[in-house]
Image (cartoon, rainbow, N blue to C red; front, side, top):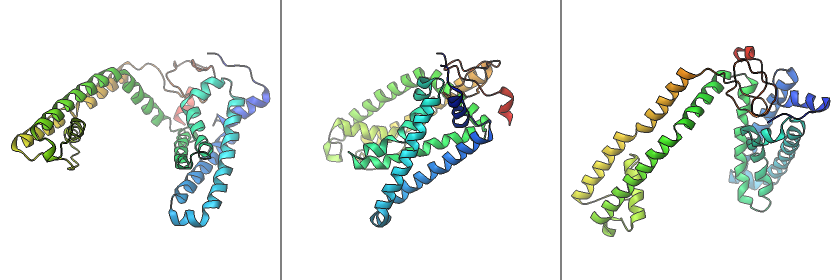
Length: 280
């Protein structure tokens, strides 16, 4: 995937909007974060019925101002991006799009307005503004461990589903509708709540055999609760031992995993931040 050529004006906008190396770029991100926080605050205040009844119209107008600003910003990001597809499909690009969609969707479905709280995810940009690279490195390491352990976790959850179905069916047979176990799905719900040691208590066994099965399920839950943790921990340790790449994040597509001597993003072709700046 190669970057397209851009005009000097697009490059200037790109350096300000996507980069934090320049004072203008840093101030742009700081102002953007302040606007995001203001928008989220308006959404939260509008959810309070008394304030909504008094200032609902004002909140609605302010929210549209924020939405128009974010829409313009999103369009400019696409316009000045060297690789538009990489930005649109990146984590930041998806979040930027989700930040503006709820207002437009709310025109047809007013309940969707509350989804504007997703704009809070855009605060992730503060990692770039403050150069909290250590946190990004750890996040990249954890994400890699989760990807590598996905199949093991899938097998684990498959076995857990089988176990919960077995316990649920047992309690359905032993307790029956008289104790609240009206059907097998409700019994499986009870098994999930029990094995995960949550224990809501809305459905409980009353017979001695049913309680014995419940106790066994609780013990099984405690016995296996550490399995996913062990799998992910092993992958984390493996990643730490075998890591020979840097976790520099591309300012364009936000992806990491580049070689130590890389100058350009291997995913979208954009310039990578200098390695020496990571410790700033």
